[in-house]
Length: 492
Image 1 (cartoon, rainbow, N blue to C red):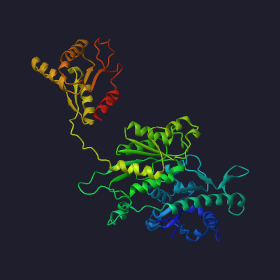
Image 2 (image 1 turned 30 degrees about the vertical axis):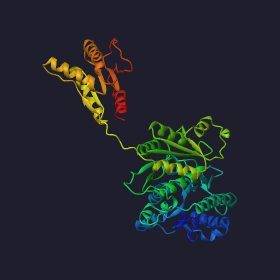
Image 3 (image 1 turned 90 degrees about the vertical axis):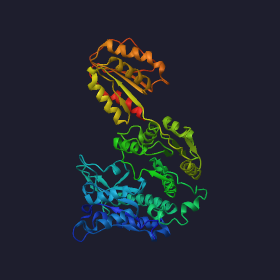
């Protein structure tokens, strides 16, 4: 049985076969590296070292007939050791291994990266490795400073300390995963529920009657020092898979817009944002200057998703030197408690009775425009429909009395009123605003939004103002962006 409980292999070694090529009768570099890492790791594991299982496929690549077998081993491995190099990045086989592992873990610290040779020119690692810590098993040559891999024999003084340092890190992670075994998969749990683990853990679980709808929790990406607590929380909630879904399903892409977009997409599906805070702020890559911790928190606030945060009770907030991070860890949404108590709080939220959604009518938008401005009015109408809002345009026709009656009723009944002042005359817009002022006393409530959109050409002040009215000025040409933002707010 491997050291990491619940897995078939403790370590999967992912490498490019070109990096293990060697002269006839000699072992390649990756093979020599593993021949030294294996005993170094077993020595640090003590008696447990006898159980160590490393998946290292030494067969040459031919057709892809073995790929399913290899990828199955990736999924059943506790740790993933990458031998990085330009050949690794170019290898389709190696990249499929990496993508498979990333898709099956939310804990980046289960990936270890050593570098056989550095990237050069425009080359770069995939997003899942781009910001990952790495051990460099190469050095510049003395003459031309050309990168050269360290030789396991002639460079033993530099090579072996790196091997033993990596062995120590692997040992620590494996022993932690032995204490915190892998949770059963959803499919296994779903087919073995006669007396399920979830029921044994919590007998207070609601029974009988109509089952409550599943709730969704976004468990935020954290810093390295709380990744194990995050994994414990994920496994704990996974025991109640018929009550709660946990996002993300796999790790987020690291860096910039891809990270922001993935977090925002998951927040749109979530009812609760859960963030476990470590002792430090965490990474701030160049394309995400606020850092991963603050980026996720600000996104949750912007999405108006309820927030529950946790920090270890032994974390001394006075010792946090970064003022912004100190503000985060001392916020009123942060709980300082044992992790078990915090787990219970999350489960209590999951089981909180949910109010039945009320049937509410869609907001109705009146787009009041002269026939000279119907082109822009139609564009605003399309934006409203995209936000699932009912729209009304003015009635045109020969009967002025019927038109006036329809206008009065529409101005008193609509939730949102948008006046378009573009190619029409100042007399027209002043007459419309005076008429609205006259009939608005008939309304049951103030409009949710009253907007006056001034378009080209540049105009003199209308001379009529309303409290809380939104005025959008586009003297040089119609810009739908500010109008779109207002409409989207109404549609939320």
